[in-house]
Length: 298
Ligand code: GUN
Image 1 (cartoon, rainbow, N blue to C red):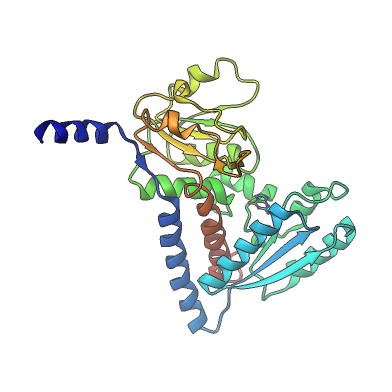
Image 2 (image 1 turned 90 degrees about the vertical axis):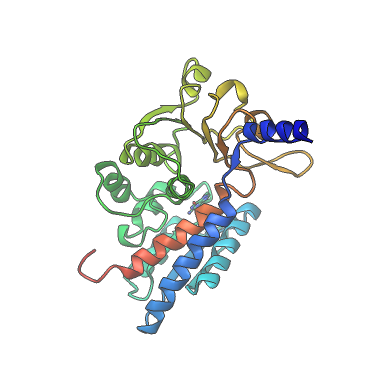
């Protein structure tokens, strides 16, 4: 019996803590719901305009989930489902109208857009005060100089996951794999703002494993299924998996090979149920923030 217990303890010591994004995102949505109820008592409704151009099935799922989350926390969502043939000019006209509406707190244009529409132009057309995705250059600039503004939801969600799991960032080696505008770059800026020592790796990085093995906190956002194996991870590291892929058997997996890395890590996010649910929770936080800002403060 004693031997059994010893084996059990030894085994449990080797297991990484699973960072439960589903639970933490649910807590955040509850907090947002309470704040939205306080605004409702003053007769104020938080409103998010969700714009989708075309009917890409993956985008439709994401957009549907965003609208569901709005309903759950007590926000109003305005849905704009535009046909694939919509011109850039028509989309810009809609954004201009939504920018001018006092009752709209947030504007989200689901990406990707059809090829003939410039994503950069569309993102820059959204008022920075309603840019709840945090993609506008003004918000990106604010993040880089440490000024308040909207922050991209996925990296903001990762910081919440770390903080709410009691994981210290300050002074620790943080390695981000991936340099996208939506995740990698803002992730690096946020970890730096938390006083982490940050390295950003990407597809041209030489000796990737050498760098990732230095990480106390490793964020995998490179977009390649199961790329990060145990060879890339230092014993005891915290591993955050941003990837989401569907394999041939229709099963979801991340950028991290969970089965290989989990015995090496001290904590790890699963896919699904890790980073994914945090993105929408942080979108709700951004919409709430937008509504809570007093006029004239913007
Ligand atoms: N497409 C994939 N992720 C996102 C996101 O976070 N925001 C928007 N607007 N489009 C996306």
